[in-house]
Length: 402
Ligand SMILES: NC(=O)c1ccc[n+]([C@@H]2O[C@H](COP(=O)([O-])OP(=O)(O)OC[C@H]3O[C@@H](n4cnc5c(N)ncnc54)[C@H](OP(=O)(O)O)[C@@H]3O)[C@@H](O)[C@H]2O)c1
Image 1 (cartoon, rainbow, N blue to C red):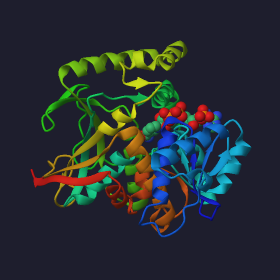
Image 2 (cartoon, rainbow, N blue to C red):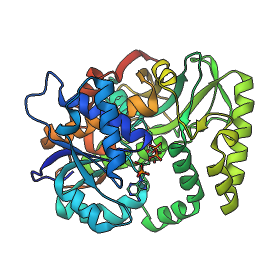
Image 3 (spheres, rainbow, N blue to C red):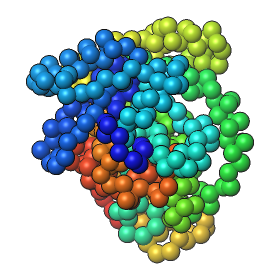
């Protein structure tokens, strides 16, 4: 986000993609939100005018808004042409990037430059990782004492037609895992001071473990949540002197048959992703290598409508003070974030509400610009209230002394 006024309050970059189409529709809904008091000039951006026009026509049809296309600007912009990116950025207060992920490298390379220019760059503002990152902050705020550690368990619910994810996310995962060694080097170069451990060290579960509370098997969650939450906790500790929370993320996978299927898919993936040719095969045959979870067509509207997610947080801490690693935590809390289908309904809602927060709650953002995680940028804003109103609901399930 830039801090001075620009012709468009929001620009959806990559609007022609699978996710971009849904984000475009969500912005169109926000534009006519009855609670909105001011105009919301916005545009779509991408490298093909025809595709962008088609996206607007499709959204107009779906939302019953025949004049939509004439209300929205179109900006032609290609990543391969930096001048076109500059031109797009100059016209936008907030750019919603649906083209691809840029995470830790962005922070290392551009934090200072963004801060100098008063620009806010906030990665992972979709399902990965707003529910997890703000869920930990919500859990901390709701605990009557000091939260020291949280484990989260993601459960994805699907309808009779099952689940599917568009292969854009599959490709990002392939490039992300394929780049692990560079990420390790990057982390070594940044040479960050360790964040202090409050309370006993949170033990990692076995790769397959049974969660008694949720009555199902779980495996570690491979998305960006852990890295994002840790970076947020570091930021809150270093800049706001808040007590850091340890975090681990898991995904429930149901019964033992699903565990075996996922284990094979995971082993295949980790093996193939290490080699160039393996990565090419993974990219070419997403459906085969992911056991049907990822496809080039993406989910059908029926699959999307029937899906939802629940993210359950189990936290522990101290009712008074911060204890020591020898003192057993004496309070527990369980919270949840629930929402509609994760990738193409919850993600657009999270992105658009994060953007609206940038536009309307700027005084509660970090003072200078920079590259931030969602939790670092939004911990003092009203983003959780906004998400609650838009169908991503945060609640306390139980809170007790141990
Ligand atoms: N955080 C989350 O929870 C979440 C959820 C869903 C998706 N995602 C992420 O969103 C990203 C997109 O996924 P998707 O499934 O929507 O993929 P997709 O359908 O392939 O969309 C990719 C978009 O990027 C555009 N693009 C590609 N190269 C470009 C270039 N050189 N210049 C300008 N635009 C370019 C494409 O434009 P053309 O149409 O012109 O090719 C298209 O609009 C992935 O990184 C995925 O991981 C994240």
